[in-house]
Image (cartoon, rainbow, N blue to C red):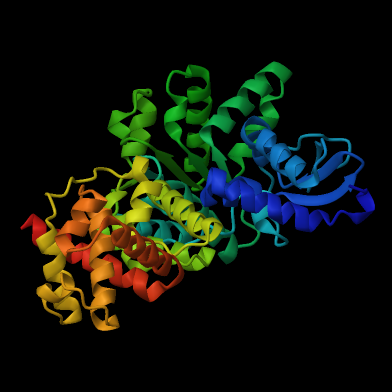
Length: 451
C-alpha cells in the first residue's frame, strides 16, 4: 500500500476495534487509547506516548499485538517508533511522574480521564468505598482519611477508584501534583535509580507530590529495599499532610510486609470492595452496553449477571464478547446462544431436569391460546402451524429427543420437524420480537419442568 494513500487515523481506529475484543475495554482505556498515532513513514508507525508508565506497559504486553493487527490491516510488515508527549527530544524515556499543570492534567499524571466517579456504578458492595473516595478527593490529606487503603479481589474496581480520586483532585485543583503508578512500576523505577545512582531524583519526584495513588501494594512483598524506600516515601508524604491512597488484593493484616508499614495502613481509612450483587451487575452491564452501543437484549444481560459473578472485569469482558459475537455473526442474541459463547466464564451451569414434550406443548398452547390436540392435528392454518413450529423448535433445542421422536409426538415426520426448526431459527436470528418470545417460552418451560 502506498504511504500517500494511508489514512493512519482510520487504520488506527480499526486496529483499536480489533484489539478491544482481544484485551477488553478496561485495558484499552487504560493503556492503548492514550496513544496518539502521528504519521506513517515507510514501514515505521510513529506513536506519541503520554508517559513512561504507559510506554513500559505497551512494550511489555501490547506491542506485539498492536503490530500484528496493524500489519494485517496494511498487509505489510511494520515497526513502531515512540515519542513522548511531554519530553524534550533528547530524552527517550521521561520520568513517569511530573507535576500536574492546568493544561491536560491527566497526561501529566498518568491518570485515565475515563475512570471517574460519574462512570463508576455504585451498589451495596462498593458504596462505602465510593463515598470514602469522594471524601478523600474533596479533602486530600485530611487527618481522618490518610492513608486511604482499598482492598478487594482482582477486577472489582480498585483501579477505577484510584483514577477517579486523582481526576477529581485535578479537577478541583489543576495545579495539584498527583501521580498514579502501579507498585510494580515503582519497584522497577527504584531498581533503575539504584543502577544509575539517581536515587535522589527518584525521591524528590515521589516525595514532593500532593497525592500518591499506588496500585497493588502487594507487589512489594519480598522486596525489602523497595519496601523500605516506600516506607520513607510514605512517611515524608504523611508528615507533609499529603494524601496517600493504596490498593491491594488483600487486607492490611494479610500483607506479609514489615510491621511498621502495615501499622501505617491500619492507622488510616480502610475500605473493601465486595463482589457486586445481582442488581449492581445488571446495572454495570446496562451501562457498558449503552457505552459500546451493543444490541444485547435485557434478558441476555440478566442471564450474564446471574452467571458471571467473580469480577466486574470478567463481567465486562463477557459483554464485549457477546456483543461482538452478535455483530460479527449478524444474529439476534438469545440466552441459548450466549450460554455457549461464554460457557467458560459461567460460574456454574445448572443442569435442567428432563424437559418433557408435554411441558413444551402445555406452555406453548397456553401462550397462543390453542388446544394441545390442535398442535398434534393436521391443521395447517397459521394460528395452529406457527405455535406448532415453535414447539418443535423448542423441543429440538432443550430436549435430547431425536427428530423422528419429536415428529412422532406431534404426529409428523422428521422432515417437518427439520423445516420447523430451521424456519423458527431463521426468524429468531432476524427478528428481535421472536427472539424475545422464544426466550420467554423456554424460561417458562424450564421453570415448570424444574418444579
